[in-house]
Image 1 (cartoon, rainbow, N blue to C red):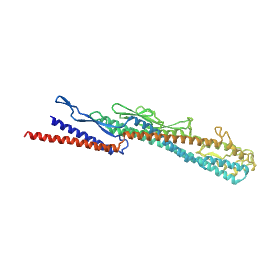
Image 2: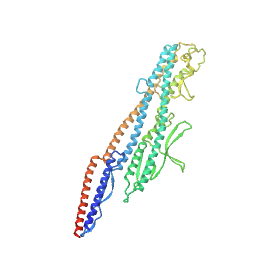
Image 3: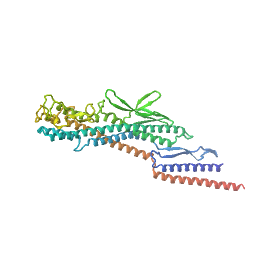
Image 4: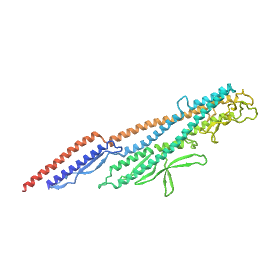
Length: 480
């Protein structure tokens, strides 16, 4: 009995050491695998039996595989991912604003407006100069092109935000489906002792982490290891079941405002539940489309597109308002011809996107700079227009340059805040990942030590079996 029990102990020692060596090899093989959590074998003494009146051990039992994954760090990294990815998307957006408005440079929109109004100063001295009048039309065209280009670029960014949001929702649904499939796999792949398959847990946590880059995610875990996932408080994964996200566009018939929402849709009840993540890449795309680039933003928030349109409309109204009562070089009738410099290409109110030079002044002699008919030397209107730069009532009790400077200043301030926030969030994210990797990640030096350790265990266990085999041989020979 003693010899056979020793052989069983040796066998169990061999199995445990060999299994631990396999686990160590798996750790080393996955040292570069994203999301892999280091494994460790946990063992305990096997149940003893009675021998010579004493309870005596029967060797070792493999209990389970331990993962070094910690829910605290996973949770904090998900929060950090959502914040950081949203801020990175916003930094890219404000970098585009710098290109669109060519700030800072000597060729920005404010400088072009200065040069435009400067020509009215020159025309106030020489109102009959056809060359100066032609230069006025040329600089007017430059101003219009800059406004048109800026508007077109902003509209293109808004369309891109729409496309990005649709792509992000598609990605999110893929991650949501993966999480649900991993939940199902975890539920049916438990070992005989009820322990979860760590591989499926790692795959699920990677999917949740990728989802957190798109939107703010919270997770609750059930006692059976199943994860329930929520986006902005709305459940999207409950065990193996999912709620599909979709992008919904609504249009206001009164204002013409187009708004995007991220919703879950229940086809059986024909019911949508608004999710609208405030952070992550989705949050950034929603903010860009619904606020920053909305030309008819109605909530009172700062809209770059709407402000640019107000600026273009304010210039057109101020200049046209003075020119409409004036006369050209060849006008003799007492009734002003009502010509203006700017008009809309679409028939709608003038905006940065539709502003153009009026067909009524394409003949430079028709530009109505005189306040009375048949007075080519009259420069009253030219003088009045040149003073627009000092007009404190241009828009919101500001001069044109004050309005434009405050507009650009607000964009710059938001850009600076976003960059500062991104840099701070990046430091936090890197710190969290470094700390988690030090706990959960594979350490090559530690695993190398384990290889030597388990190799020695195997050699010792083999020696037990070898010695026991020799003893058995002697016992058998004694019986002959």
